[in-house]
Length: 309
Ligand code: SF4
Image 1 (cartoon, protein in one colour):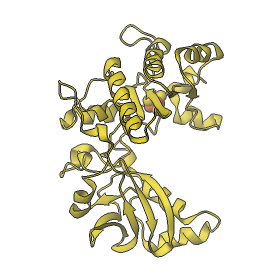
Image 2 (cartoon, helix red, strand yellow):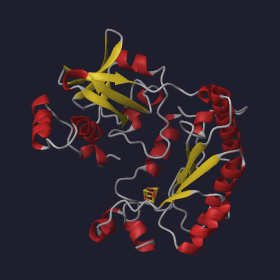
Image 3 (cartoon, rainbow, N blue to C red):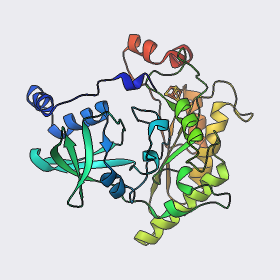
Image 4 (spheres, rainbow, N blue to C red):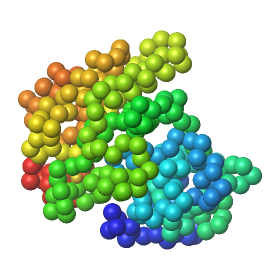
């Protein structure tokens, strides 16, 4: 995580406009999105106040931040939105959503101007910013205090296993901070659920609650997508191998409601394993290849390279 924050953290308006000219065939909103993810962004007090009414960032898998949580002195991690949308402004941008990626030293700052969130670069207003609204189930909690939205994020995302058994620099994928993220969440004491494994019955209840809200809203049971993800299980977890572990979540989600579409993310798998996931209720599998270049794959994904190749 600390290593990630060594990336470039400066940018001027002139440099941004040079990118626009150099890559004239790319939409400007995409160039800006890329830069906001690469350099990060920060929130003023006023923008934090506006954002605190939105769909709060879940830290669902990776942190996606360029700074550690312990340095977020205003508890930004419990106030910032999961993502935000940039729009209009001096470049007439079309709406594009961006994963909130904090860096207190970023030249990109979100501020409130006349009650509207705006994106500023070097103090100059670039465009409007909009935050996502929270979902109804975000207010619900289990009797032990666990917030529903810490079990399933934004009505979709289930990180069944919050750690990865690829451990340390010789194994973990280079872009990934799953293990560090789970640790910093726990240390912050600002989250209601810190165990590495999500209880299946909690997930089933939250999914039921999401489906109930959606049905109430549209008047019939709509199709609902879920994504199950989590760290790699090299040997066993709670006595189960990776296939058995993730299959239990897939079946519970798939058959626990009416029109569920279940996505699963794991390492690349062989055909037999995929058939068994399919039988367990998986509709779509993302094998997370990350990069197609053999040499880069060996370097970026040392653990996966040894196991999957
Ligand atoms: S397989 Fe790689 S990207 Fe996935 S959780 Fe493990 S270390 Fe992270």
